[in-house]
Each structure stands twice: as C-alpha cells, then as structure tokens.
Image (cartoon, rainbow, N blue to C red; front, side, top):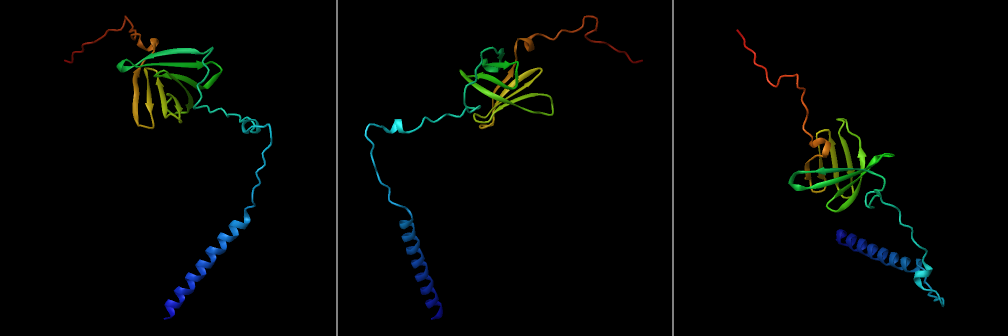
Length: 168
C-alpha cells in the first residue's frame, strides 16, 4: 500500500504544479490595449527595413570586368567575369543566371571558387575548367576550355617526334 500512496502523492504534486504554472503565466502577461490613431496606416507606421546584401544570393555587377568564355562538353557554355581589383571573387554565368563565387585557397595551385548558397564550385586548372554542384554531388560542366586553351600545343620543329634506338 505504501507504493500506491506514494504514486497518489506524486500525481497530486504534479497536478498542483501544473495548475500553479498555468495561473502564473496568465498573470505575468499584461493585457494589451488597442488604440487606433486616426490618419496613419500600418505601412506608414513601420520604418523601412534595410535589406542587408547577401554576397552569394545577389547578382554581381559585371560592368568593367574581363570576360572569358568557356565552351564545355555537351554544348554547355560558361562565362566568367573577373575584376582586376577584386581577386577574391568572380561572377559566373551558368544557364542564364549570374552567380558570385568566392575564392577558396588550395594547396595544388588550382583556382577554386565557391558559392555555398547555390552549391556551385568552379575549379580552373591550366588545361581546363569544371563546374560542380556540391548539393547534388555531380558535375554540371566538364572539359570547359577558353579560346587560349583550345589552341593546339605548338611543338618545337627541331625536336624529332619519334626516335628509334637500336640496341646491339
């Protein structure tokens, strides 16, 4: 019988604490008075909210930028805009949308730029570039080459293309 009396006492204590907490919450919030002022609307009463610029979401300005066009596999095209005074960012046009990408340091010497909001990653190496989607873990464009990278590599005319060595 002592266990049943203990359970009954605990349930009464819990119930009284719940009621006391509810009564305290009702008394703690003062009643709000509604007063309407004549001649002012809600829109005029609120101050204008200033929008903080979001570097990843906002489209960058590309005026006075160096433009590099890339032709990729499957007919994809990418345009990169670079400002001479801003080495930390590029603007990348992909599928009729302009994205701002921020430089990420690498140990290999490759140029890596990211936009974490959209999950875009541009990796540029001397022979090609590629665009990756980090959110879906897939390649968006590969084998992207600009006009300079599309030029054939010139070989020195004095060097023989192949040599034949005979071992006797």
